[in-house]
Length: 282
Image (cartoon, rainbow, N blue to C red; front, side):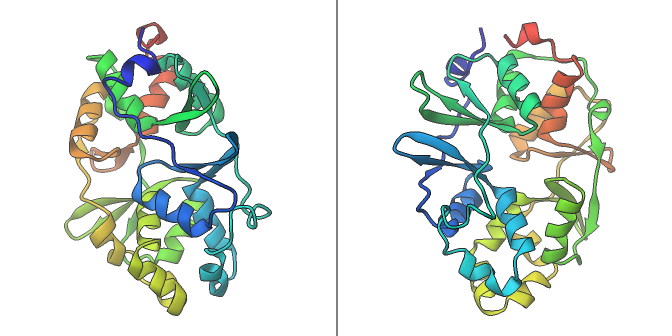
């Protein structure tokens, strides 16, 4: 049986990022910008209160007065709860099967789950990156063509400003865009935005020249926080895309120059469609 317990030995699952309600938003942002996890767990006296996600921070900064952004970073999670309430966390027990984890992700519509022990204490975080690795260990071939699960790519020019990009992500309810640059196509997602936002230069700009930061073209941070995307043909098997994405260090791939295959497309979508046989994942 391919359970969380068994694939922990084959797939590296990061430890959960845990903060207390009295920690600053700045601390949460720095943690989210330097680790692959998309959420920090809010805990008090061994009680899980919820989670703070990277997209929540970006949305907050897009909504409040721009001149208050830097000051807001020094509020505690508790102080900001009225406008940035921690959300519930999709949780699975250590003995859950891959099929059960994917079902939880489908029902909650979010790509990360918190792994807990028998005492309901967090011991790890399993995201779509880890599940892609686990599926690759379990299935050698899916007989699903990448092009049938890939999504139309949202492609923007690198002259778009940082402020416009944040609004573009929320307006289209997406977590990543493809940035067209002179050397090819790059992927910009909420993590790359957070890395730029919470870099020393980004924080200094927000403190002293917030307009310059929000109005600066994304080509500035694209040089540092994004990489040239790897391309795959739509006729290739999904299992080939898993291997290519993992070996290249990029969760998302360009498909035939116009589509994007995200972890959700490559793992969850085939599962929803019933094309990943749950019996092979139990």
